[in-house]
Length: 325
Image 1: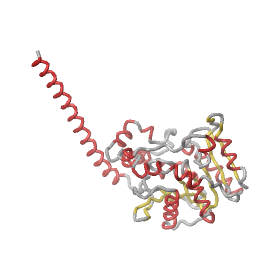
Image 2 (image 1 turned 30 degrees about the vertical axis):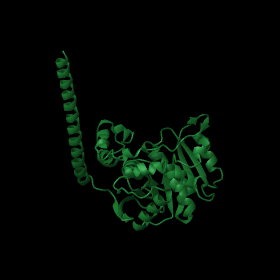
Image 3 (image 1 turned 90 degrees about the horizontal axis):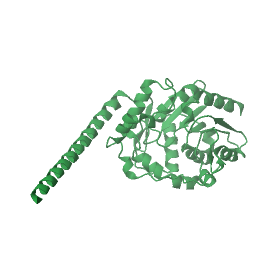
Image 4 (image 1 turned 45 degrees about the vertical axis):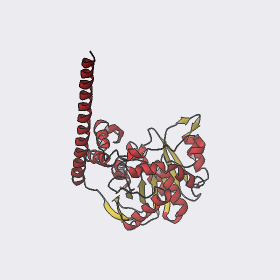
């Protein structure tokens, strides 16, 4: 009887071991496949802009249009390919303005970096990329989400280089105190291996809605979506983005006492009324703008990535605001 039980246990362990070895083999094959596809897609989908060297690494800068105003679009945290994500808005704005997208390290076609993701470093890298691209200010900074912090720092330290700030639901350091939220989620370092291990590619295949813009069909050209998907597969939540996320608390602390200069025109786009424990984001933005001589708050129906769906309205409001100031 004991011999029979022993044989059953041996067979069970053999089956488990075979399954585990098969799983490891499949995982290894997927990693190899992902690396091959990444190399192939890098050739298939070349950069749409130009590269400049910043701190010994390549930074991607995309420009379109001409005009008296130079608008610098700055992306939100973990947006895989900013130059592609902003495309509908770029197309509208560039009809009357020069539009620039500086893709930070870790984003789009730009290199990764191990340099600390402090607000100082990110702003200085952006400035260096603009100067090396011979794009002269003063600029209209147009930050989305977390880039609101970087734009606030930029305007306070280099006011002569900033003509106006147009925020797309921008993150501001005073939000933490106002809403009492924990806005500093820690991101485990192991998430930086999502792309090298092929997990990011798997996510891009099975759940593209978590990566690609949520917009009506036809808003983004098919080549844009395919390119964005390939970049996400190669770079989504990489080590540079992980480091930036984990630097947020310190970056909030550095900028917590900064406000918009009173003589700097500021316009903010924000989604319709959202309450957190009875507090409104609209009320928060009104408070931030009350001491600004030239200001405007535009409330739009939608979600955090307003430029996916409201690019025409945003362009019209920006042009009117800049021309009227």
